Image 1 (tube, rainbow, N blue to C red):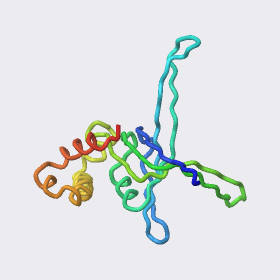
Image 2: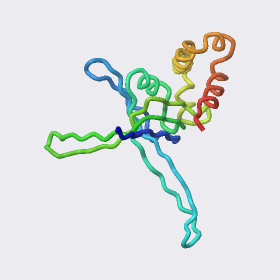
Image 3: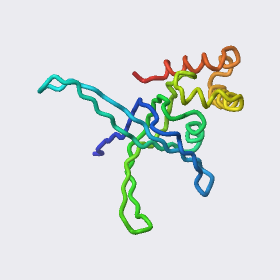
Length: 167
């Protein structure tokens, strides 16, 4: 009899820093960034409102890493989905290190253009606008060829985000 297990993470939060896109020696893209999630509740003892912020290390690989590196900016609100992974390594000094991170296989940008100061500032340059629109349109062409040709890119983004949220 086999025992089933599940390692699934879904987060909605804001980027704490700009993504760091780099490449492995064999050319595979890897992108890392941080997401902050918060929750608030009222304390049972004194009725005071409490708030807690959690910080998560996020890692994306291959094509998703390249997309994250191009589209995401500090402050962007995103939905990510993936699995928890813990890695151990030794530093050059011989110290043991451990990190727990979320390795994602799905990401949706929830920030619309212009709603985040940092994001809209980076997209005000003409070359950034061209790159962002062409990058966002490429994955959609593979699944919705007719719809992409008829609708503007920004309208697609809004529709896709609301349709794909799993709850």
